[in-house]
Length: 352
Image 1 (cartoon, rainbow, N blue to C red):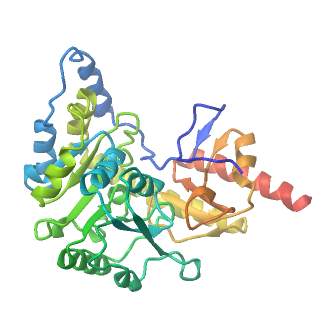
Image 2 (cartoon, helix red, strand yellow):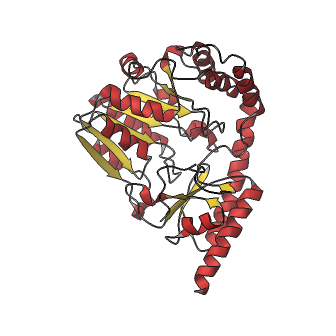
Image 3 (cartoon, one colour):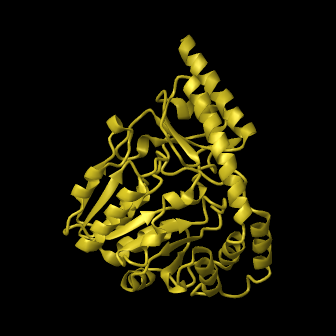
C-alpha cells in the first residue's frame, strides 16, 4: 500500500499529476499572485500580528464582526490551537475524518477520544444518532462538513441540532467548513448564521482549498465566543500569519467571480468523473465536494504512482481500510488523463 499521512506529498517522487489534494482546479488567482509579488517588496518588515486589515476584509465578506475572526497559518494550526486551548478530557470525532483532529487531541493530552462511526451500510452518511454521543462530559467535538474524505454533506437541520445540543450542554464544537465554498450551493450547508447565538461554536475555514493557496498557509476561525477565541489566541505564536499570506487573503476575498466559475467547473467535471469511474465498475459515493471517494483494487494507488499520478489512498484513515481512495476534481484534460490511467490499470488487472 502507498502510505500517505496527507495528500500533496509530491516531493519524494516524479509525479506528473497530483489528484491527492483537493484544491480549486482554476489554480491560484492572478490577483493573489500579484499580492504575493507585492509582499516580496515588504519582506523586511514584520507582518501585522493582529491581522487587522485581513480581519476587516473577512468581516466585510462574511458580514460578521471583526472580533469574531481568528487567523492562523492554515486551518491545521487552528485545529491544534483549539485542542491546546481547551485541554479536553473527553472529545468526540466522527469517522472517517481528517487525521489532524486526532493528532491535535493527542498532542493536548486528551484523556479519552470517543468515535462516532459513519457506517458503510448507510453510505458513510452522518445520522441523527450522533446526537446520542453528545453528552455533558464531552469537552470538544471536531466535525467536518462536507466530510473529508467522503465529500458527503450533513443536512443543515441536523447540523443545527448538533450545534444547539453542544451549546445547551456546554460542549465546544469546531465545525470544519474548509471545503464549503466549492459546494454547488455553499449557503445551504453552512452554520455561519448560527455563530452569533452560540459562543460554543467555532467555524473553521481556510483559503487553501477555495483559492488554491496551499503553499501560503492561511486559515481562519469564526466564533462569537470571546473566551474561546482568547484561549486559542494564547496558544498561537506571535506573527503566526506571514505578510504574503495576509495580502494574498485580502486579494482573494475580492475574487467573487472566480469562485462562481470554479463551482460551475467542479459541478460539471465531478459528474463527468463520477460517470467515468462508475463505468469502470468502481463503487463511487455521492460526494458534493470538489473530490470523489470510491472503492477499488487495494493496489490502485501504487499502480497509479507507477504512471506518475498521485491519488489519495484512504487506507490510513481511522474507520476505513485498504481499497478506499479519494481523487480531486480537476479540469477536463487532467480528469481524462486520470481516467485513461485507471482504465489501463483495471484492464490489465482483469487480464490476469
